[in-house]
Length: 356
Image (cartoon, rainbow, N blue to C red; front, side):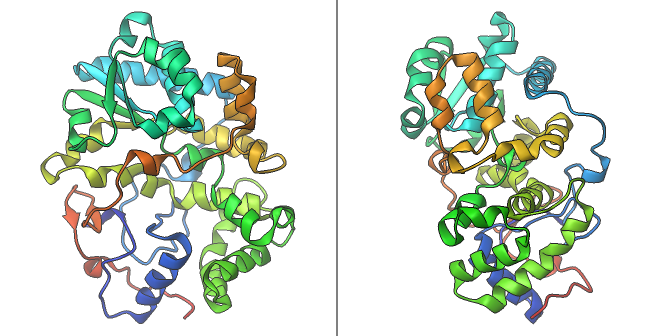
């Protein structure tokens, strides 16, 4: 038995290297424990990889509108086959979930659209009021409030679609932290290692921590299918290759124990497809052409082509999901048989080393 998902607390084992890594990563990437989709596995704990290995994601990409259409049609087939009465979409008001829900409304037949519900908060509406008041409130009749508990209710007789994994396809929001801490120009500097060490040093006040943390993850560059030339490339590749599984399962932590397996099976992230991954590999340079306002440009351009809302091109990414979900929960992680755990002590990988 190994882990499926975990957050970086709950370790009280005997390894000083693992304890140091857990403390370091909490300061650098907060709650996240990454799960590598590469041959190189920098994580100190034993995980079962349930996402695609990137080496297996092959073939030529479709364009973004074709990828969205195909994904919407795939979800329609899964909904029809499920025998459930509804499909609820978590809409934070952000770019990723907006593209997801507009794709369903664009490509699903009108009769099937009657099954679509929306899970939102007041913050969702405030982030994109024009879409809510101009379109969504008129076309979607089943409305759920995202803060309502229990979380399980959104899947009692429905599939749940989220905008999760959009960040992994479109880039990394850590880019904005780099801009804030060490400057916009540093993103394109050829020495991405230097940029990342400077960023983490500013963030933590500890240059030695920054050096050992980046040294642990730097070997992922060797397996990248595209050249890693600067911090933008590195951050996208880190996000895409290391954080996919964590993000895929993090919402499951809100499920009650007796329903977590059911909820995992009924949750479908819109961007969780090989087509989106192929698109991300071929087009990642398009997602941040000049500055933070241009982040996720391809997604925004597609949304504008459907809505006619030219002002949307100036939208910047916000931390939308945190307004949808309360991340306070006592469980440390979940095993590959969908059981919650309160300690990581029994899941260490033999032979793992860290540059303490």
